Length: 134
Image (cartoon, rainbow, N blue to C red; front, top):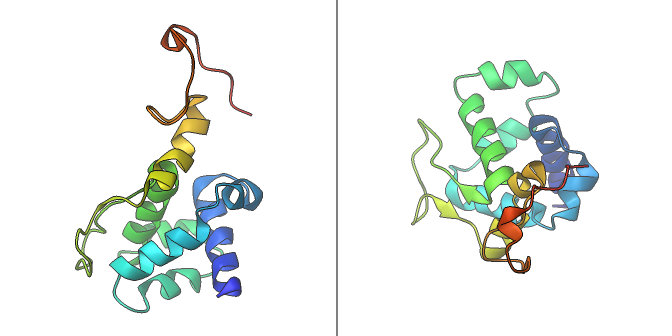
């Protein structure tokens, strides 16, 4: 399982543009692998992980491209979206993985913002410009 999670992190880093270090620091890698396993037909995630290093070929692939885009959204939003052309294998088929996933979404760091309703920011924080992202 550790090797599979490492491959998942490596692929996710290439797809999202964030480093493996940054993705691991979210604490969500294992939860995201488990979420994908629960919502995808057996073998589909492993097929993506085994696809190799040509990211353009992955994104252009009719079967793997939609899954790769779903993983990008997962990392940025903490939510699973239905993969086009793939039957849902769980109920509900889409939605926020967990409160921790919502808070760990990369969208917050990319925007230099805080997860709404999850971190105290102080009175009138909405009036301040976001801090520049690292």
